[in-house]
Image 1 (cartoon, helix red, strand yellow):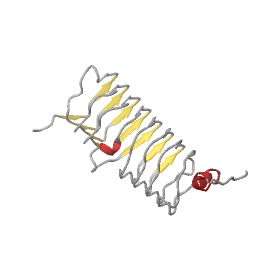
Image 2 (cartoon, rainbow, N blue to C red):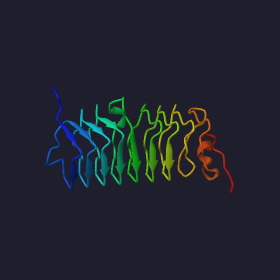
Image 3 (spheres, rainbow, N blue to C red):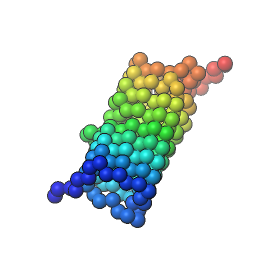
Image 4 (spheres, rainbow, N blue to C red):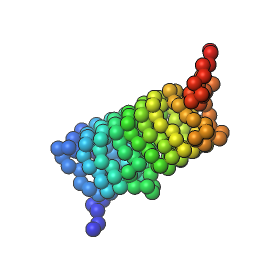
Length: 191
């Protein structure tokens, strides 16, 4: 079955809980001030799309393709990015709320996150190498068996990363946040 194809469409102020979004492939589309809260985007495809000031909290994104997608000023609470289609996943996040999201085993190589609260986000077994995180809050985020090689976390804070359980070769950290690498040792560092 061939999916409907939508190209260069603009969607403004749409509540997709009331006005259903057609299942299909969306290419270079812009979604502004839209609500997707708790709907299913199962098996949708978004390529080079932008989501600006949208609420995608608790959306079912199983088998969804996000290829070179940008999220700006979006609410993405509880999203299970680990259930997206495993190939072609590339996304960039700017000033987005990603609390309780999961990127478990996701390839995020080269991805960017800027000014995002990443509270309780699961980055276990992710490839975050060569990524860029700018001014992000990692309160209670989970890193386990993650690849952080050459990852720049120099402007980030509130992270706890076990160097023995994660690859951190050539990663960048600020000296003020090094305590996040020593937390498991329960030591006190004086200013």
